[in-house]
Image (cartoon, one colour):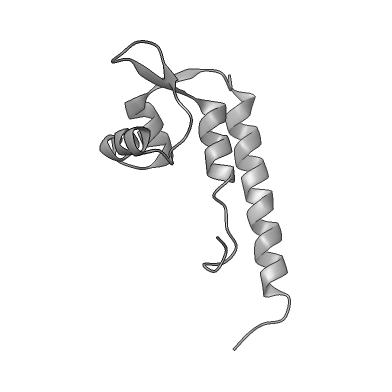
Length: 92
């Protein structure tokens, strides 16, 4: 059963929620550098997943301060999240 207009309602609610989330996070210092553990916690994923994405590609942008020192900017994490918002599983 399909409810007419439901997709529009979900899309507008999702966009509104994302806008509020983005504004809240970026009201703080958007250029603040976060440790990889903090970035993983922010994304609600395991630090090893974030490390894997760094190695294989596909994850958020990161800052390499030295050979073993990696940081993430909040604004890059938010941008990466926003780029992955979908309204349907058929969205690619």
